[in-house]
Amino acid sequence: MTVLAARFRDRFLLPEGVVYLDGNSLGPLPKATTSRVAEVIKGEWGRDLVTSWNKHGWIDLPRRVGDKIARLIGAAPGEVMVADSTSINLFKLLGAALALRPERRVLLSERGNFPTDLYVAEGLAALLGQGHALKLVEADEIVAAIDDDVAVVFLTEVDYRTGRLHDMAAVTAAAHARGAVMLWDLAHSAGALPVDLHAAGANLAVGCGYKYLNGGPGAPAFLYVRQDLQEEIRMPLTGWLGHAAPFAFESGWRAAPGIGRALVGTPPILSLAALEVGVDLLLEADIEELRRASIALAERFIAGVEARCPALRLVSPREPARRGSQVSFAHPEGYAIVQALIARGVIGDFRAPDILRFGIAPLFIGEAEIDAAIGHLSAVLERREWDRPEYRKRAAVT
Ligand SMILES: *Cc1c(COP(=O)(O)O)cnc(C)c1O
Image 1 (cartoon, rainbow, N blue to C red):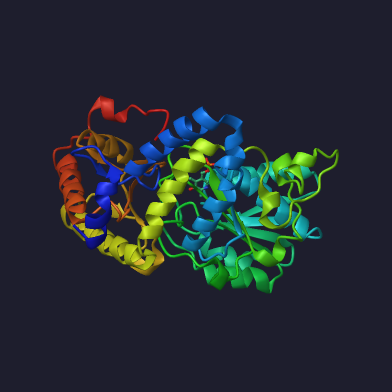
Image 2 (cartoon, rainbow, N blue to C red):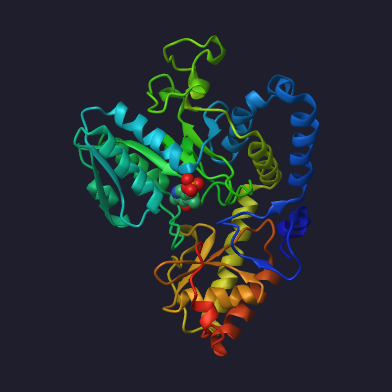
């Protein structure tokens, strides 16, 4: 086992015999989450009822967990809020970005960005009805495509299919050089690799709570607004908890100071309590050490798969510094191969059209898991185990 996995693996509830290479889709359950959530349910909700909002600090939870996430992404206290889903936070911040550049009409992203990011932008542009347009180019064409019409550049730092890592500082600098706002989606970055929003000078960011942060299914997401923009931005979703005085029940909306205006409605306390446990666990680890372990494990995985599974083609960047914390291979029968692997206890996932995706979360993955995954993968291919009707039947969630 790596030093990290030796230290942290036992802190997660992982079923015996399962190699979990899908922590990038749904992080596993930290053991402490069960007792913490039970305590919030029984000891807080059950016993103290509505007084818990004050007595147990529920009202401060979105900001408190946000401040903790800030430490993982190179932000300062007061710059990160936990709220809503990644999709909704994207809507909020893309809307805020467009309001910062009212004379510009283009939202620029890459064609391969995660669909919800693109769908949200499309819907926002249509809603505004002011001629805003979504412009999509290939990843390596982004910088050249930033012109004076671009209001906001929005990108996911780590590509969900290939794991390719953008140069956050370089792209942000290019956006700023042309006067555009830069928004990063950290869904596959936060908790997976060191992120430094301050060093990059990023304006805005969003990220996901249920992937590498291990917050649980449907965990609330987070958003980041750089300190100097907080008083300037106009949020497109103006709910009562983003009001300067929610309990004054005034008839008109006034923005809460700072990041407070990024809240919309009542936070999901049970989910937030679970997310806090996942984030606390990550904060115990050294993120630089985590990155080194992730790279070593990914290199081991790539070498092993390439040696033993010649039918698979690496689609992740070969250079570790250009990869996030996942390794992807392509194969025309990718879906069935992943199903056959799952039947053997190795859980990865499939992303259309032909990608087998393996997330490497070094808090609970060590060399033994990587070696087992390579062994099972080569057995599935050599014995054509994937070639069975039950493995070709697509489930609702892939
Ligand atoms: C996982 C992911 C999301 C998820 O959005 P939800 O609103 O939580 O469903 C969004 N964007 C990217 C890039 C993702 O990887």
